[in-house]
Image: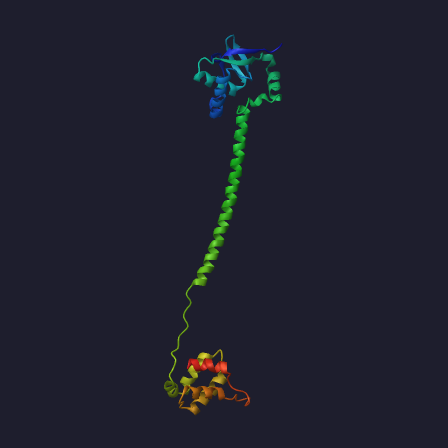
Length: 245
């Protein structure tokens, strides 16, 4: 039995689909083109319920677009359709699908479903990206905290070295042996115990000092007790000791 095209009254056609499942903007766009062309280039498939009532089998998107066009302009009151007999519905719908018409045009049912699937996929990708970036941000925060801790440690005020008042020549002359030994003990990294003892003995025996030159000459002239030809201290050490007294 050949299938024919019919112009059906839009009011005589119904759909069991919820129009809210379709993209409203695409419905409005298709409705606008229907009003401008005054026709639907892709007929819908319907089954006959009564002599004057029909139900959409395929093409629900086109149907709702035509319904919207009718609401905008009541003179647009017909829709192109193929009435499919009950015994042919399975084969016709299969042919409809094989021909790629199941998408029912740009933004139709399958198109809308594909849009939803695509959006869900992109949302999943975005979620993974946010999680990955969140982990990277947390790691960066931890590194920053570590760097800040090291920076604070480096900038922490250090205790000032104890400043020892420099003695005058007269005060050096007044120090006893123990005081001289303690004074020279400030240079423990430079002078060992034996060297300090030898310097103290030499200073006690050579006092009073009449000038700083006299004291400096004494310090430089001290001989090493175990090596008579070797000076007890060098000029560099002498300078440190002399400046600390």
